[in-house]
Image (tube, rainbow, N blue to C red; front, side, top):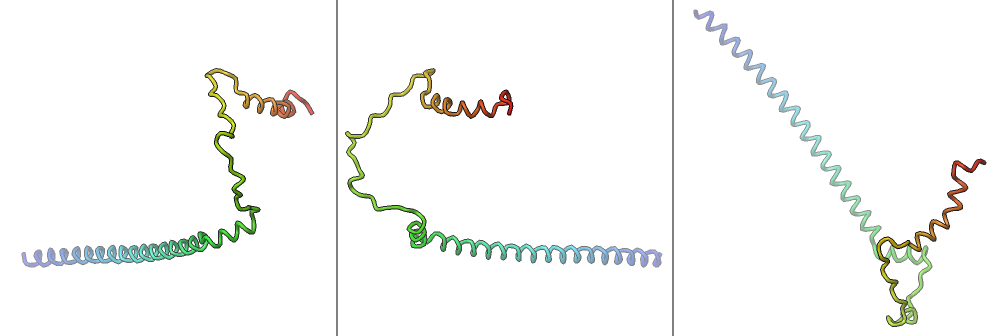
Length: 124
């Protein structure tokens, strides 16, 4: 009877040791995973900080003005460029539904010769 009890206790100790080892192994693996994730988060924060620094450099108004002066031929607006509202042309009337679209017809007539050249009916 005592021998059976000793064997049961030894088996229970072995099972408990295996379970403790499994828990320790899993916790070590999880700790490594957390450390890796923290490193990734730190890298992402550094990347965001670098992008913000680049953005502030690129978004600098003085830099943008220098680029505009160098690459665009802009001039200062003259007060004579403005016109009075009564001298502006009138807005065209709204077309009723189903009426022909004049601008669309002009575009189609302009594109028509190109379409006939590229059509499969026209052998080359």
